[in-house]
Length: 380
Image 1 (tube, helix red, strand yellow):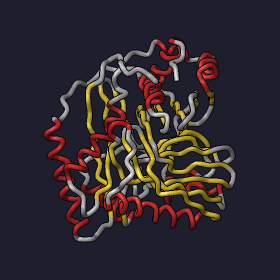
Image 2: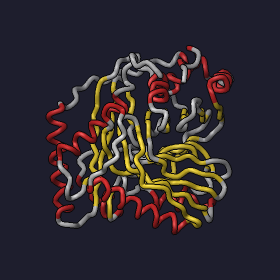
Image 3: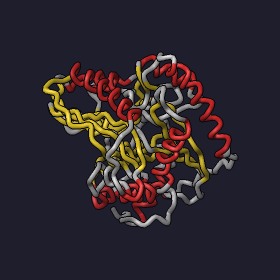
Image 4: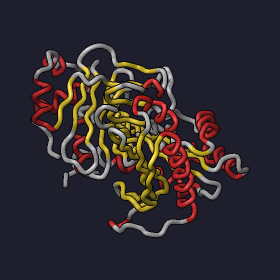
């Protein structure tokens, strides 16, 4: 994917500092992106996932809904596909000239914690998670962390979006901004729910290994297989509850950047698309980003993880039950603020987990976003 003309680039970057809400997203194995833009009024905030029933638009859903991190949905006042149409759509904006004169926000250059301190924080959380796992109170827990770094004042979110599109063709890439949620950029391999009409698709994605020297691993250890099995069992039960004619493919090894995961595809017919919010409420959070038993794990993470996940491991994407829906778990993502980018990553923890390998897994996952922060990345 190439960048659009400079005027369009500047407009889209300015939108990330505006009171408008918009999203750019590119689906896997495609080479053009969609624009969804709300041109007036406040961005709608919903009190719960079930309230997505009957809604249409681009959604950002946090891991845990709160006053600080609401569920937001961008109304599609403007939709466009590929740069020529997006450029034409933006040129019709009455506020385009005002956007281009929008000043850069002042960066708050506070110091970030060192790698050594971050690892010690992670180690303390790891010990808190391991105790109930070894006592068999949980089958699985997901432990995540964040890492902030300075970015230059002239950092261009759109350029980073295009770099991600070129580097990660297998993933859904998005750039989303609303005044309520902030600015987020992600490159996620995990479908939460996609489909149209009666034909729908979701996945169980769990287990992680690096892919050195572009060689796809074929052997998976017991820990990764168990983790994937827990997620697949849960997804299977939920799809049977809401759908019919279920079929499966997998588990198989699937690449995501320089990592591979164990993946099982679930295809089913959805009985009632008018209540898709009910299905999403059951799916989110999946055991892939939370744990089992689900409700107990969700509460435990909130009390013991030691930081706020915000929109990381929530879900995002286009919702339209009368057209086509493409919703993805918000993984391999970062929040962009003036002078600062905060990266997020996590991994499934079992009673057999070892801290060094789990820390390295989160670091490997953060490399997905680290690699597109640098403007010297050459596409293709």
